[in-house]
Picture: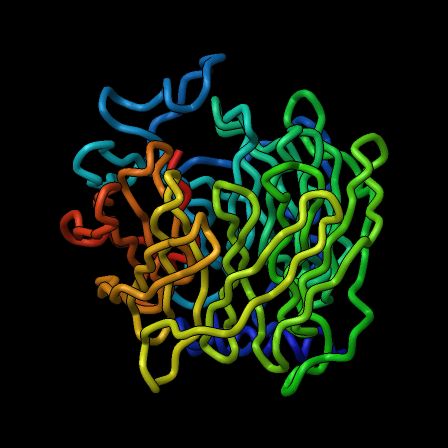
Amino acid sequence: MGSANGGWSRRRFVGVLLGAASAAGCSSSPGSSSEPAAREASGDSAGSVSGSPSPSRPSTTPSATAPSGRRPLCLGTYTSVEGGGTGIGLATYDAESGRIKGTGTLTGVPNPSYLAVHPDGRTLYAVAEQDAGAVTAVRLSDRKILGSRSTGGAGPCHLSVHPSGRWLLSANYGSGSVAVHPIAASGALGERKESVTHSSPAPGPGQEGPHAHQFLTSPDGGHVLAVDLGTDTVYSYRLNERTGALTEVSRASTRAGAGPRHLTFHPGGRYAYLANEVDNTAAVCTYDRKTGRLSVGAAQSTGTGSGTNYPAQFLVTANGNYAYLANRGHNSLTRYAVEADGARLRLLDTVPVAGDFPRQIAFSPDGTLLFAANQKSGTVSVFHVDTASGELRLAGEPFASPVAVCALPL
């Protein structure tokens, strides 16, 4: 295997290997072109849904298909590891109690480890985290797979939709590259329009190459930013919204060996918060809307002590007053008070996540619930969020979901 696959093995040690000992790095990841996600979009492929009756075909957004008081929840997993799922998990949750009820599985999408929804709420997108990386579109009204496209790289682990709804952005961890796909009016994906590999700077301590971990749009929509764990760098690009081309405009460096993983913006748009996976720190960043330049502040504590811990993901409340950080290893959520209009994080406490290895966290659309996907325990924990105090209260027993690595409440 090449260096890209070697890097992916290291990530599996941090991620899947800690959740399923049989994963053995990328050797267990399907890379054959016979995999369903390797198919090119034809507009007429369809996955199968198990464990639930055939859905109706309303023309409304997916929330209209849920029972009264319940909303849809999509769950990401690894299909190629022992104990993993068989596709995208389908569930509903009660918007008040947070109680989750499983409704089935959408098969035909391998290793859907990260999920995102189109701004119009009609189409779900999933990565296929494998050697031959791909992204897949699913129409939510009838759960029809609209096809898959190659990302041109290995191990895509994150994707997001540009606010315009016209472009899908994805990050290939194994090959250290980012990709841009056009989105049709139907929600289906077109052929990849752009791919950029992070060839410099040199890899950070302990890294053998670039490892793109996130690709997102700034709140003002003017720039797209790629977080690369391998090069200790956040790259800022300008996206040509007509052609999908990327033009690099700035680079922001963390301290050597930090291993930046995930960036979340404050609602005000001037500041962002960076989770550093490798050195177990967080950082406040300033963002210049005009130039797209991000500046990384001093490393600060995650509140998890001296034990082994890998920060995963930040969330910020809609009112901008509190931030939460998922901690894999310490198995907690760090709660910060956000001060000085977003310029400062003040550590308040850590809250047990009631699960093992929280890989990803997400708010419900109204911000009153927080979902944590716990990879090693195969569970999803739900918390009530007190928007005034920022306090978290566990909403009952966690929901069992095989190798839960992503929970997307709609």
